[in-house]
Image (cartoon, rainbow, N blue to C red; front, side, top):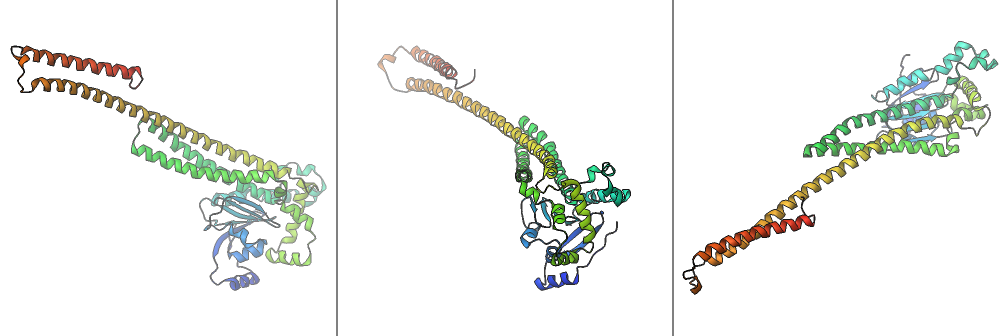
Length: 392
């Protein structure tokens, strides 16, 4: 599968030059239903002209702008913005932005592997056999999904696996750090856990947005019906002259693409334009996967909260020990103050008539005051223990 740099059509180039001389050129890779890829170095106006979407839809895919994860169904395309996966899916093509990005390369490889399965199977069995009987198509039943669903499945699988891997990495780092913090509270461990908690909060928001987007699609059958591009393409054929002309400009092989899309949609839709069961099952599978990832992050958050509660209990215990020490010191200070007061009174150099021939009284008073101070200290501590102010 060679990669060729395809120049823009003269009409497309003229449109781009008229719009702005310094228009942004971003790398795109185009993959068709046969798995062939083509590198496109075109501006946004050429992309808009090719897939027939508005500028506001293409702006969602701009990596310089911060847009949340979104899956939008348009008349001729599906606009997919899932983290680093920024793609435009039509009934027979996938346009993927920034194919040289390290996170996008596995998505490109998976698209090359998954997209041509249905086409190769039909070529091996022959077009006549495929249309002639249903038994010939049973071995390839898993490949009978429309092209846009297979491409969308690759994008969903990639983003769910990516977020699950990030969650696993976070869990691997967070649980040992939390256990270490409970055993030793230090500034280093606190700062490490703070950074992990910040990363968990950001990752939770990203996972939550993808989950909400899938849930919103599942709750609205009309939004899911908009994603059936093959159905809309087959119901719109034969195309009007102006529509056919515009499609021929953007894709020279559109006639064969329409016929293949029609057969794919007939195999799955069976004429029911309101049937979204196939897409619903696809979205439900990845909704459950992303919901499981969110549950892991929720469990991690609860573990962090429990660790914080445990640390707060430890800090309260240390604080109580300091209060207990302060009470001991205060009680001892009061008792010593009483002892010092008595000793100071009897030690003053003041003549007393009752002190004549009674010098031994000074010694006994000092001894008795010391004993009284000690008894008072024990009484204070006993009262504090009785009231639960200090430990036993």
